[in-house]
Image (cartoon, rainbow, N blue to C red; front, side):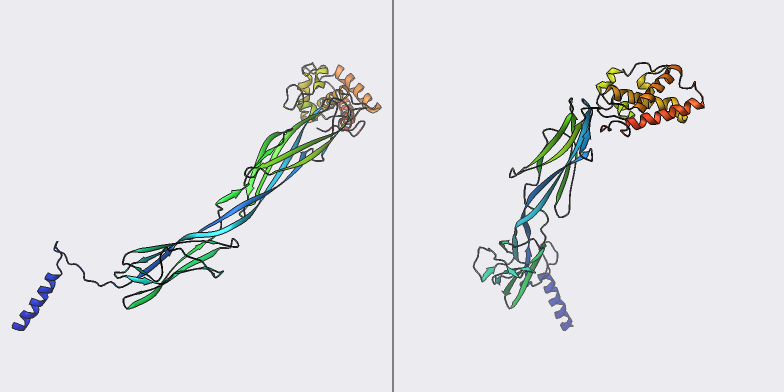
Length: 388
């Protein structure tokens, strides 16, 4: 009985010694030395852009125009810019944090920091002399900044050897980094100007490698009131926003305004260049009048020109080419005997017939004369065709 009583008493005393003031049990665990290394790696670099510019005529695509005196034409240009990047001043910066996570002091040897795959050793600025005693629960922060020869991705590994009590070891921390976003961009944008033209629209894009492409679309009205040969040169310029670097490119349109015989325009041109638009007004219409009654049709010149020849109606097929030819002649275009004959026949036809008061024979003849006038209006017979 005495033996068991002694055992129970010893157990009771041990339990009493482990009681916390609040009545709980506090674990009695011995913690040895332990070291943890963490690190950061911040890549930094500069990106500088070099720009090129080119200008091209998109309308007319041939770069040449034939216009009648006083005729306007909307010339369209495209200005292409390409910004090519060059990266430089590569470096990586960060910290190495060495923490004593154990319950006893540890002695640290000088830590190392190595880049791979280069094998470059990175100097660390820790602000202490090694060997260095790091108290339990405390941290030592080292800083670094390392210039690099290129923008390859790398891994940065920091290691430190330590001893504490009767134990020793090595702790390491690692961080990988890639050069993706520059901290400084030089000439990453430009201002584009074309003083003699109006900006209509623009598009832009950038590749994963950072190449910037931009296209600006400009428009310019061209008109000459006297005959002759002209060169219309348009110059666009760019200015970079950081260094103010400039560049320019030009495009030329050759314009011919015939002195004799002028040139001809199609019915499509005359339909859209009246005072009703949508294209710029051609003053030749004033010599006829858009609202002037067209013979016995019950419609105006303008209305007839915009009436589709439903079912192949010969009246309207001929009327469209007749009106266009009339306007071409009033605009100064010379004619041929065949064109004169077709115009005379058409005028007699319209003076005596409505859009539905004729038979098959007259319809066939009307279409034949319409074909003659169509060739004339398109520059296939007689004067050259004007640019539209």
